[in-house]
Amino acid sequence: MKKLSYLLVTFLMFGLSLPFTAYAQGTLQSRLSGGVDLGFTRFPDSDIDLGTGLSLRAYGEYLFSPHLSFTILGGYMEFDEDVALGTGTFSTTEPTRFEEAYVTGGLRARFLPQGRFIPFVTGNAGIYNGHKETITLVTGEIADTTQTLKSNDFGFNVGGGFEYFLGRSVALNLQVLLHSIQGDIDEEILDITWGLRYIPIPASGGPRY
Image (cartoon, rainbow, N blue to C red; front, side, top):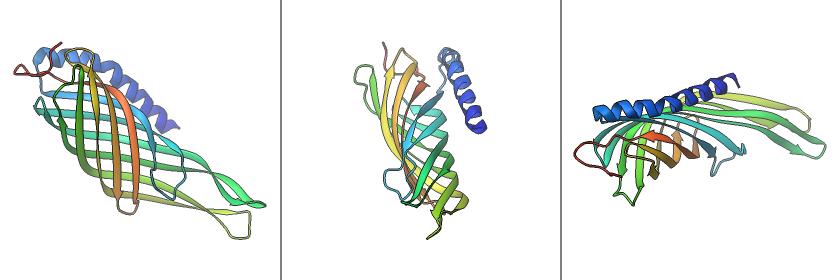
């Protein structure tokens, strides 16, 4: 919980500073931008029954053009659930945790604006650092064993969403990502987030309101 508290404080500080960063970058017509996202995650198809988790993400972006950019994502996903083991007399409930911190880089492509909405798709690859707890019930006894796996794995994420401009440079962001982790921890995680992001408008083009 202490780690989660630090992440929430970082998220809030970054979010509060974003409008000031947007103003400064808009004045300089910079091609650099940044944003923060907060949302929920789930395992779409897994033997791990951990319900819904928390997702936090911060990212930076460099625009090659108004429609194509290079993006670096730094994020954290956490699941904390009480897992029921066994049935009847030989049953127990134990807390378990699954965590993933990741840094990935890739491309984001934006489509033509639809009014204030701009849809986009994105794909990224990088390193996922995971902490996975697996709890199993000992046959015939009310007892359990816990195995903890910590691993650095290759992974990638793909998805898309849309941005809604509040003005020339600041937009709300809704994004869906599917994370695929390939390695000792082999999982897929569906990540749905919303957030605030600044998108610079180069002098040569971009939506104008």
